[in-house]
Image (cartoon, rainbow, N blue to C red):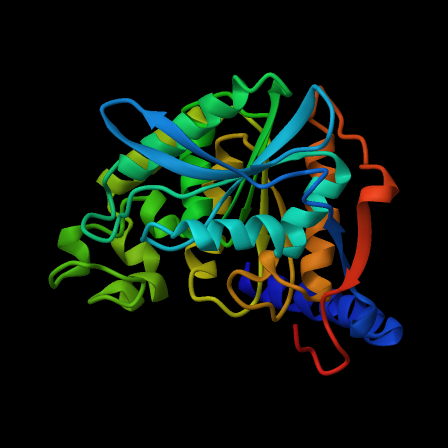
Length: 317
């Protein structure tokens, strides 16, 4: 697959970035949505037999029903509320979804740095989705989860645990989903990170660590996925090898038929950023999501949205 991917990446890369250069990166904008019309709401969501988990919500004006998108951040640690608020107000991609007419929900969750295979974070995220489905303004059948990296692994887990309209994952850290990252395999003592102990060896040669036990573990999870799956891959992260060599083939073999789009040369986490590729990611993901949404979004009134630049000619945000 790697050689095919390389040729495809070169062609797509020239097309995307040639177009971006032609129109000028400084022309890329994001919608800035009035906070008086769409306030930043901080909620504390109950989790069974566990502490509440915080989330930040912004929703279109009116009673709905609206579709909702839950964004799951990357990493193995809990994020502070200030960072969730920044993602709700300053991240170009969440701003685009809000302006398009989605309720946006940005939670954090308990850490996995002490034990990468704990289900604490998954339980928190499932509680968030249950909460969102019960919001009076949200159509419970039109809830999407978008996650990047560690959040992408959680989104795949959730797709097998609860009813979702679809999921969107950017370079999911499926060394978590498959169970390859665990206290024993990583070696050393917690807290664990993406560079702890044997982590780079595992990501460099995932098939070596994909034991029959982990194959069954992974296949059972994939078999439970019940919604459409969109996978975005950049071209620089080592995590792409497990997704290329194991996860995407396993999804296809199980009949899940994921939509996979390559964004050549993009760094890990690019879907949240201000680049031309991030804008393309939003357009691609939005088109994919719409196909399975019972309740379609309606763009916000132009009087409460203005376009603001997200990148200068020198690429500074």
